[in-house]
Length: 555
Image (cartoon, rainbow, N blue to C red; front, side, top):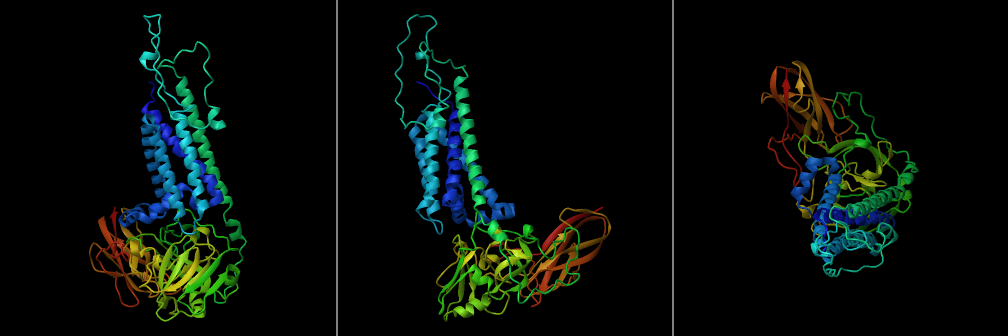
């Protein structure tokens, strides 16, 4: 009886998984990138993973959390595929059942995403089928390698009469292999062929040729599918958008608002550096020509708008600082930009919310939801349906063609990107995406401050040192910022001018540093007189608290 080594069986399993994932990518070009198995299953993981683990990923990887998730999922899949390959070497049906289970998981994950239809099952089905065929080819078909003949089937060196051949065990049959597999199969043995000795390398070469060709094909298919998906994106449509001139331009940034201190965050965050935290593993590609916004639910006058309808309305431009509720004390999940858009209040006034409709549910094209208090959107603050960011159409990853911007609220309850619906309802009747996962239904931004320079563990020279950073309390404004050294007295920092209460403010303080190790701390007080509490609290359920602390060494 012949067998295959564990190492080659594991490699066969990994190759089969690579074929399944790689081939599914070009199929997903036709059905939508969110239907690709790796993306669909990754999205399911995002939805069901325990919240502490999700926050750990954000804290460790920050804006690269999605890449980390996809890489981690791929590594885990490879490990499971290797195990399935080893098990399949003993019983092929185990490996085929494992591949079928993963295909079923991919189908289920794809079909349960918002806006899915039956065609979204195709990438997982096609990939799973070809993955199963690949596994068969390596373990029971023409690419089988590392066959070790049993001693009873080898000619004896001391006997001229060969021992009776051991009947081969029955193996699972399969359909005629496709040309790419058949091309790798060995030729029929000629008459007088002798069984290969264990040291013969022919089977190894045949096996590795198969691995190389199929893995390479999978890589080309995967990368090609990714490239084709990008070609079908909306970058060209975005470049064709001509933003209207605002009827109410943003106030000019006052002189001195940007202190231009090294390592201090600029007053206006460039688009490419603006933080991105959301649940979308692939950025939704929304064509403005087909985009529609519905304002419905508990309203007297439902409204539906096209992108052209929205652009035709009077627009305003405002500087607004956005912050993520997952931002740790001293974190960088915050940014300030100049937004162009239509005031949400005007649209809601036209829709006429019914009595008791205290929540506006923003719904993204991918099904994500956030719940914003209706009263906040109608209290006169500059809450916008934004179409522009820092003088250009919204970047695709930041919500193109339309997103919500609401000063004073964390993004998880207000900053709906790729928005397609505003539904009027009640907090008592509907929980938005993050609420069942342990977060507060309403999320006003807490007063916060941060030291940008010097950085932790910096080695400084004794003498004058510029300590600088940013502070924010959107829609309330910052009254004072104070700094202290080594638990000493609080010293008031100098505030730079700012545009409005809806943006952060830069601050600075001149410190006469003395040799030794020192601890710097900062706290802010908002315009309502509320000072940051010293007590450290985690980001869940409604934002972190505590004083940002930096330890430095002065030489």
